[in-house]
Amino acid sequence: ILSETKDPTKVQPHLKKCFEGIAKLKFEDNHDITAMISEEQESVQFTEKISVAAAKGAVEKWLLQVEAAMFNSIHSVTGQGLACYESKPRDEWVLDWPGMVVLVCTAVYWTKCVTQAISKGTTKTYEERCTADLMKIVDRVRGELTGLQRKTLGALVTMDVHARDV
Image (cartoon, rainbow, N blue to C red):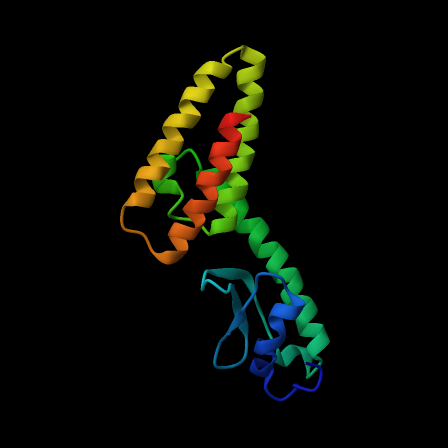
């Protein structure tokens, strides 16, 4: 990896060993890095471009910037997902966000709602809502989806079943 100072795109085959869940980076023509892409081809844009040229050939320097950009970008997109969670029906919302954001935001909202249901004594009502939400997602899975959406919703169904049964 460290020997690839002339062509930073040659680092691509080694990224899986460095960063879990990242298959490749999106390089612009000038070698600026603008996004990370998973094995499933799910792309998350970086909040800031990374200039490989500014690292002046120091691969380890721009890889550290990539790591920081990954964290910042996931943090940002998860915050946006949380902010938009209640803006539309959940079975529509799940199709608008990266898989990890869907799963994290769902867990956050489940925890919030369960806490409220326990304190208000409305756990039975919340269980019914969880079941209704689960059935809407199952209906969505039966429809037309991309492979990536199907994989995300499959994981979500598993989470929802376990969450409902708690």
